Image (cartoon, rainbow, N blue to C red; front, side):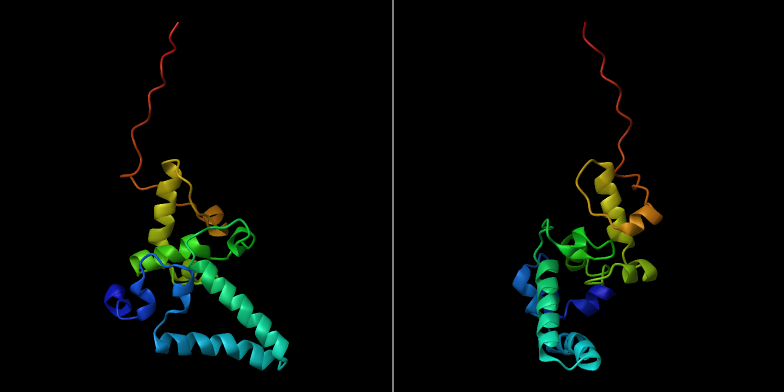
Amino acid sequence: MDYVLLQWLVHHEYAAPFGIAAEYAHPIETMLLGVGTFLGPLLLTRHLLTLWVWLAVRLFETIDDHSGYELPWAWSNFLPFWAGPVHHDFHHEKFDGNYASVFTVWDYVFGTDGAFRQSQADRRASGKSSWADIFDLVTPTAPSSKSTSAAKKPKAKLA
């Protein structure tokens, strides 16, 4: 159902987004997100420098989320609730979860990140690198049965 609705949004034309694709959005999406971006600084302070700094932070955040790279200096490495590129790429790949572009707490609260957390648990179980945040410490997800292999037999030592 979500795919039917989201396939018409221009922003979701890219299943594997790149940095500048963050700015390639439907006009309605741009207006809705733009109101939130401008409303905070305009209500809290009226200084132009504050607005410029806030816009630079938001632009960096959207380009980082759509870059596809988990860079060492990315905010998701320092802030436990920050979404980051791995989290947001799953949203563009599946279109039915991981709606939070910044704070993963909302996806956790509303349960829209279950498939993503399961896929990351499967990656951890198979020994691949995976993404994790503070919620993985609170409620660990068991790997699915299809990704777990039979227990490996210990190799016999050759004498």
